[in-house]
Length: 271
Ligand SMILES: [Zn+2]
Ligand SMILES: [Zn+2]
Image (cartoon, rainbow, N blue to C red; front, side):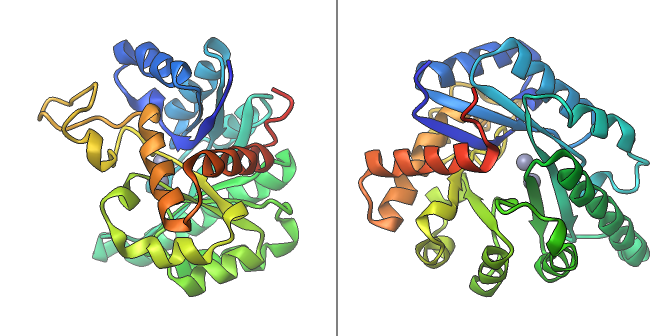
């Protein structure tokens, strides 16, 4: 299969099992590779399974910060991280959006501990981090800075990046890249940041099944029970189109650059 673009952060394993083969086939037919990220134990296992049953798919394994209070089994993630088709650690990080105010401090502490585990594991496995950060950029950057010496030169990605220009600068200094997804097809708030970030530090994602790019909201192959579009990797091309537009680069050129960036970050050349 001739890969043109790689959806650098997605969750095909969270789409109904009956649809998964068709979703992957649509991506393959369009030359789109897939990196499925785990967010808990089951979705990490499922992401790994898909890499062994489908071409041009890779996995990352880890616990989303929402799992922090659920006694996550860390040993299982360590084991999964050894698989050769696991190319990164995460998604992991901090999510302080709408925390239960009664338990706020406790939740933050547990999330930080869980995040530190992943940073350590990324170092042991020598695989980049896939970071989820919502409303917690200051703390995320603080933690990463305190582990600066443990990070890889290509330290990982901040997926679905929504931080400020200043956050981006500090994360660039730590060796991170950034993925952008469907949001940038209908929200112009990130254009300035995308213009600022060096082109070789940008990757494209869908974060499917969520946040469908604008033009597929009405024309999606799959809909959920409420009639809303289900996002899938083949729609990543619309994200690429917008990145090209914002960066004022030809789309075919942008595709090449994004592919290079993704292969370099996740060391996909051996595949
Ligand atoms: Zn996320
Ligand atoms: Zn995600």
